[in-house]
Amino acid sequence: MKVKYFAWVRERIGKAEETVEPPADVRTVGDLIGWLSARGETYAYAFEKPKVIRAAIDHAHVKADAMIAGAREIAFFPPMTGG
Image (tube, rainbow, N blue to C red; front, top):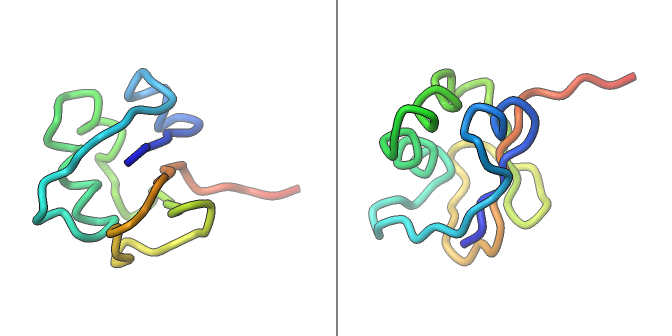
């Protein structure tokens, strides 16, 4: 699946997107955040406060308990403010 990173999440990881193949036990967005965090220092730094990270699966906003099976794209970004 393709994973995209935006704003300071992207800056901390050092890339805008990548293709990943998480293990079978990674079933939810929260699981994916945990798995990504374990991939190295930059990921751990980007996801150090997972409750503030927002996610979207195939362009639809989702919560951490959303299932990722069948997802083509998952995006992570910080909270947004409007104006």
